[in-house]
Image (tube, rainbow, N blue to C red; front, side, top):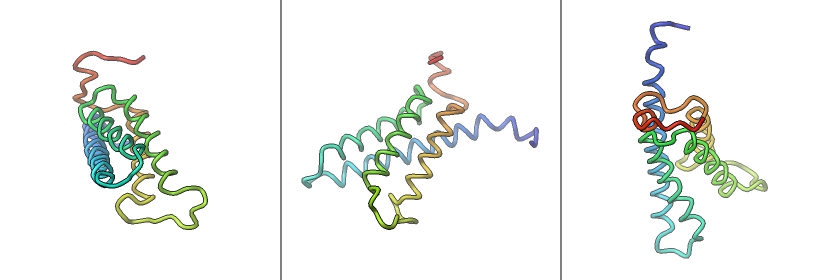
Length: 130
């Protein structure tokens, strides 16, 4: 490991947390907008609203690991809704495609396991889940 870069690890997780949360919230907003004005399932609207709420909590670092876990569950649910097990071929390299969902699932797992990095609301308000 390159030791001088180790001091930047908190800020790399901060950047990952903010980018993940913003894109998750934007994805949820697009789901809500797409289901508005149609006979869409209310479940899609709930998933979109949950994605926005979880994304904003991750951005601000409020209970980061908990909301990253819930986001990971949300991405697994959305993956299996969009691509049921009988789907013959997955779509890749498109917005909302399988690789996007898998990448954000992996990012949620990283944030869940290591935390939000520097400047979280958890550290500011001294909120600890363990």
